[in-house]
Image (tube, rainbow, N blue to C red):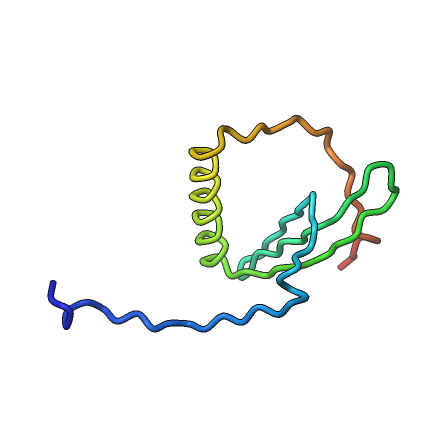
Length: 104
């Protein structure tokens, strides 16, 4: 394939604000979905604390959720190839309460 036949990829400038670059700690993620979107709530939960707080919410289209799943799986595989298997410790199920339940 000649250079003229190759599809041209445009570069995207990605800006990263300092406050976002610092990151947000999360040790729990809760995922919900509808027909049109996936909602991922990243939560910080401290041992012994009666409450946990959603620190960030990311909303994805189903297509982007699937791409994210593939990208995360690829990165986990590369990490484990370099550093060994990530241990998955059994955790007791957590009763989650997001406030009162809605009624129709």
